[in-house]
Length: 292
Image 1: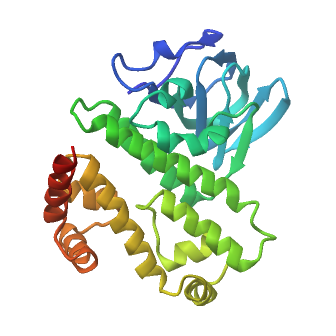
Image 2 (image 1 turned 60 degrees about the vertical axis):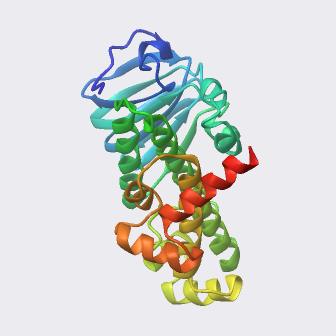
């Protein structure tokens, strides 16, 4: 794990990405002094969780502090000045190389215009949103250093969850003037893209800027079922993809699909699909063999 980086003016991804691994890395930054102007050949997402600084780019100076997230494109020169207890975590990645990987190409494509910006993008997130992002960053960091057959898949999965949450968080600030039902639909679309999210009524209603009572009433009117039923269906569908496409254990899949209790996951899966997760996986793979 990289704790700090010595400024050199220009950074190349090959200096940071692990050899033979994904073109993706997590850097934990802690600055007690100003950070000189520099640029890089990779995209950078900086999640600031402590302190404050002045972020300088060719577009001007901007105050940044805990709760801000910066998307910094390839080749953009920038620096941090006037730092005070300034700490943040960077996710750096080569978007072009990631897009060429069969493992991630199809799922990353919808986010391309967002994670590959042409200019600096700045967001202001809540403490809860920053905490959720940091949790996913830690999972990405952990999997990057594991060397087993499922680590690349898990790394991409957590990275996609990170992008989904970031994209959804960025859109929330633009939802204030939308009708309540449209705000709810936008939040639910985010859940479909990131099944293991925190999907409590309290959290979902907050993200859609409605009260819990109105959220429940409008949700049922729009979708014809309760939020918990809808979310569980999406999570079970998400787990079916993992059962088909990976060799993860049922317990691992339950966790990735948003279920803390693997026994409850198996019970719910059997209710919805009529068979256990293991039987579903074996049956699906037998069918694939016959078709091939």
